[in-house]
Image (cartoon, rainbow, N blue to C red; front, side, top):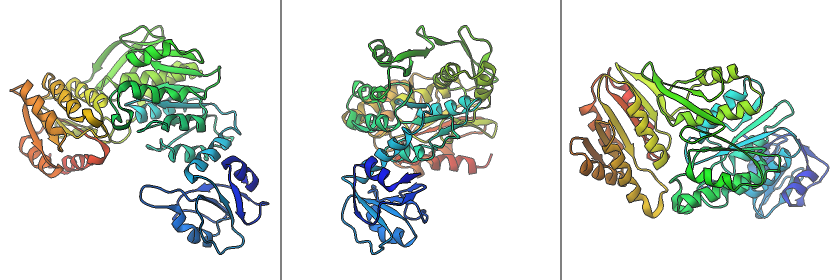
Length: 457
């Protein structure tokens, strides 16, 4: 895959040990899984530092190692390259590899719905093309480069989700992947601890288009006011819009819930009806983004509709599962105010014989406005059709307090931890109820999902 000279040039490094007339077929940053003949990049992570394992990987037969600090390697057949930062070197090498191909890259970002939209895009485009995508949530400065290293001539399209929690993340990912099409889902209160305001989020996210050529295309949600305003002043690229409330090229019409939990809608001027295995109205936007991309790239309309109808939602992202005579919506993977409001709408839309119960944990990384934003969500819940609210965590107590103050008839239980929430849920849950579970990743709300699945029907 790479000659040593290409590696040195791409990473702006210096060969400090070994010979330069060798090549490697693949790249690894995992000392446990690295194989003989690979390039090992000693990345320093939050827990482990790859530099601590260079002797171990050298003993496994690794041919080339990239480091950013002096290490002792007593293997004369191993070539060592010194760089300023191994994490940046990983990205530089991935960009070098990406630019070897004319394969179109579609990159997407936003405050909520990124992973679901990425999976929908891959499903729709997979009806016509062989698609490379990042797996799970490998959407950061590590995951995106590792995905691009898998690019071979056999792939016809690349779909990459790009995430951020601080300024500079998205422009770096854009520099690495050089997208031909950039898709934006929405802009809202996410990662405010470092991005400060929704406008700060927009500024960071929009840089995904910064390395596009004049032939690039931006696909934006016209119903999002910040994105819509930004798209109007964009001059570098072609802009394609999708939406429901605002006029757009791909505009949803006649949105409805069929059979109790299937979201259906038509797309203006195009035949057929979109059907999704969810009642979450926010997923209409994810599907519209995928529809727009598929249509622009020539996927037949009938194939787009088929892919969306068969689409299975990723684990923990709005999965609807039977729960006795009722339902459980597993939306436990992550949370912020944007996705929490969508979750409330989803629970409201679901047809159920019993009560609607929301179990909501802390929304993290919201900075100075965390308490205020939790309270605002509490007021949204209080005005909805939800019958019972169980909160988990210190921040969510503000959600509970605001909900209780706004609606005296709403059952509200503020719990300090998951165990207390499970105990409370066991007391109020009845067969036939609909339960939605949501919280930020570090709150581990999948434990509540497991509790419910094990509960007697």
